[in-house]
Length: 204
Length: 227
Image (cartoon, rainbow over all chains, first blue to last red; front, side, top):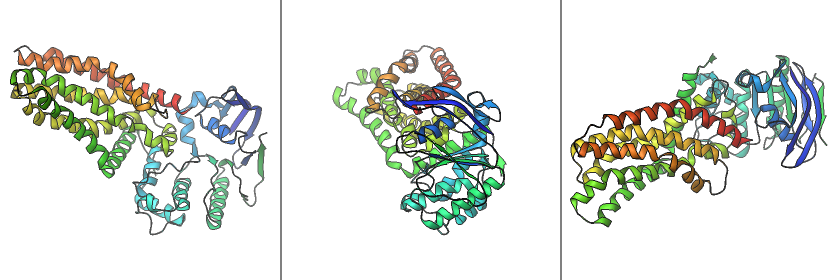
């Protein structure tokens, strides 16, 4: 369970938000809404522990994430604006290294299966620099398939994706929630997961 | 899927950086060619006086090694910073210090080891004796990893800054002075028939000290830079 209490965050001298409190329970999904510059990404980055909050506390399973550190990182997966893939490496190598960094050893056949499900059949061994923007995003999103993290923090996961891929992401999120996972995300495109309550949090 | 340990992480990161370096060979070669060029310019500039060349050889080789390792330090974290990989690296569940150590090892193998291997050939240009070349290589073997490790701290601190390359050199070069002194001192000692043990053991001690502290310091510097 992720609990945020009385969180305040600022960029430079500009206060983005203050007094933010919410809790996210297993099986729940929450969208962070707000206009450009309202602090959606800053909130997600604070939840990852990249940024220090000005005030307030973030607790994971009842403990402050500052004191949990690595134990918290093992339970969460962050997908940012940037794809975090290397142009010189193939999709397969990228995915296996990403899994290695998140503390799991990924067999080649599992990695290939994940990439195929993301619609990258036949492109597993191509250097990612020859792939299109949408395909590169798919490589990055394939990490969702090979992760066993409980908490997914997704910053604009749907950018550059086509309709088919958006449907696939909705499917992945639904499966994750059914495994009593948690998702917190931002998006400017509609994302609908059937059978669960879509919570939302407005930053203004 | 198996959970991986810290050693697995070290292996994954080192191998990844080596593969990336092999796919961008130009970067590796520029460092090495820079080293060879700088060292070769001295005999041309100073003139063919053997005594003088022999005397200045260790200093020239060490300073050139120092400068060329500065060249490649800027790339240590900046490429990963630009494409978002560094964010994922900060979230490793094992240990960020271990990951940083992996990157340091890869950096040394790509930017430090080739210099060590090239040094004997360049030593001949300066008419160094076989004994002196041997000690020079030993010193470089102990010293260049320290340069990579100290440099990583600077690279982490100057991450994302404009003109970070120059600032990086200003930060790191003063820290490398002891390595330079003992590295060249060892070659001077063997040339004048003294024991080199003290110089080399001091270099060894510095290497061990750097191995223990720099990964942790670099990890903290990365966290500050990414805020």
